[in-house]
Length: 390
Ligand SMILES: *Cc1c(COP(=O)(O)O)cnc(C)c1O
Image 1 (cartoon, rainbow, N blue to C red):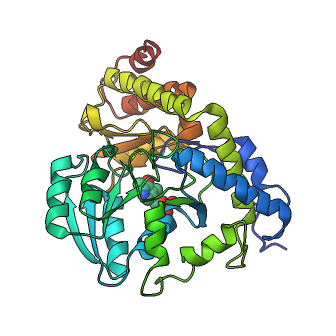
Image 2 (image 1 turned 180 degrees about the vertical axis):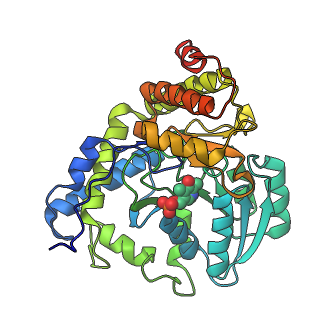
């Protein structure tokens, strides 16, 4: 008996990092509901309802919209391997870690990859994308909507036109944007997109919502070669999700799908517009408080993400010292910087459930205490007062 470890008793945290975000008790309760078989009529109904709610969240009519088994990165792989055949040209726009990852995935899928790059924290102009499309002549253009590694928001409204005019497909990473800022799959002409559950949908990590336009679906159905991944083969996976065949492919993670179902219900109950407005309001409160504490943003104002606030670590302040004090004394997790931003920035997440006024105020009070421990000169109460004034 003595060598059996104790049961799982995780600490209660406030998850203000780059994901996962805080999970609603309603979603945790759904995870603990009785497991049924993957072809049980009850579960088939849950799948249908989940597809309908995902279409609403993605703002699309796309028939091929479902939750891939796996985290956000599995959604990325699913989109790439289904659209790309060996030797196909793919253009990937890299301005952070996740664009880089997409180029890596495309290379492994044997695409002929061209990349364009912007420094971390910046975004691509329409002009840059148009030039790259013209010279690379790609079949697929991949781009990240909300770069969680940098806190920058890529404008997407106008790029599909130039990509479609060149005969290419637009693939978008919506992992962090979905449920936090507008994602308009149909209105913006996005051909394929993937998301994740643990960012602004506030569900535990484990599923990747994906959606494919009719044109993308046609390309998948008319491939000459087999899809490189058996597990992520959308021809087979979609047969299981379609109301006609329900052919067994792999056992769906039943309880994770319950959780996603409940988190989508919460998203739609609140309403997409109200949810986006909440994310924006709490971001503005945080911004006012941080400015009063002398903490600056790392991204230009017009490109900032409301759910992922990348800020510069003040001079003379120890990155890890502050993050571990936040966790130890206040139970607050924030993220450090990635790539060239490592050691220079913090990433403060206000995603989904976490995006709440009280979390902003608590964080500002906690950060003030940590900055004081570091010997920084901060006016007592300034952050909270400024945030309350918004
Ligand atoms: C988190 C994230 C991913 C990867 O998702 P995982 O769930 O960690 O696999 C991909 N793209 C972006 C923009 C992300 O924020």
